[in-house]
Length: 481
Image (tube, rainbow, N blue to C red; front, top):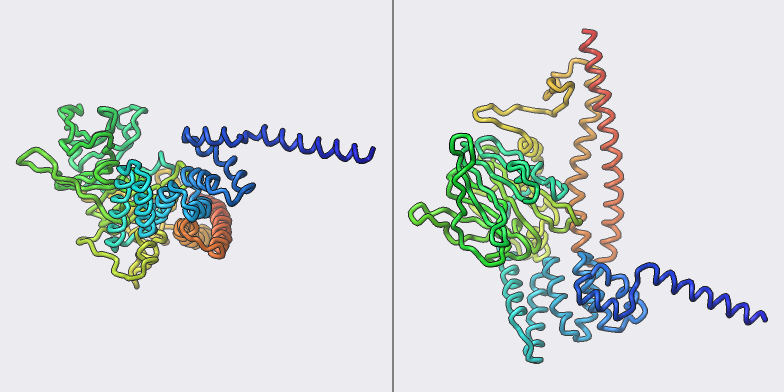
């Protein structure tokens, strides 16, 4: 009797676990494979993870799970199953592990994987066109990484993908940039509009023939008219987007998914030929500006001597990183035989790696980057920016008349400097966490990132409160004065 009761309890628990498994959205192997073939990788991933745990030596399970991890951006989790599938000679594993190495800047390994993949396809008498195309791309990326430019990236800011234009503050002499939907009052087109410094010409992208193409308009009387499509070298199926034109009116930077782009959008430059009314063949920018991810909207401000570009490399879904850099008058390569250092500089794993010795304090340039400079207006020398009232802003310590307010704000200012230091460290550490294969290093980085995030949140709340106290103290003093 006792035996029967135990059997019933065990059966009930088994059925209960099975029911929970079914209710959780898990699939049978056939269902998981169907989702995989339909490229619904996020939905198939949990099931394949379960199958790998049940049968860790099954190379097919490892391949499918590794691909699901790769396609959903979980690069760390993709490493082990894909490496196992390669070891077991799963043909497609060479392809996908090559893609993984490519995304993590291990370009030599990426080339090796695709060379082996191509050999297998030839042995099996299968179509090699795709593999040959990807191998060419991997070799281009390897050469590009070898020629990584030694550019000083002095600041970075992670923002929502829809909000990245807020990080660009151009001097009036360099023109202006606005969201397309705000400029034209059209919400369906997600791109930007560049207006030249004379405010009589605009450049933008919009859909044409099922892809994005570049256009320009001129200001005629009080209307934007005379729309012209820029006569560039069109590539079927490729998007051209996010234009910026230098003050000379003939040099245009833009992003494109064609012309040999490494991944998604890449940055290109071309020049207008007045004699033939055409643009010269576009030149692809090198690393660190371009990457295996989306890179777009590079902008130069000659007045400030600064530039910006945006990338979604190593960023969560829906976020991008805007990089602030000092343009080189003439490109200079990163000269080193240390492949890890070159990989770090190419991927912008840490912006500090690009800083010059003795020039680590870029505070004034960073402040200048966010400053509006109208035509002919002298630059405002600022120690900080404290809004007392809507029409009353303090920039210097001597502006604060209340000793109480000054004392409070000094605390806030010190905390702001600490906060800036944390923000500069967070992004490269997150990138380092993604790229490293060392478990010990990952644990160290995870603890460091968590600690910095907690401290950042504390500082943000404290700074906000101290600024409020300083503002109120100054207002009270001014009223009694």
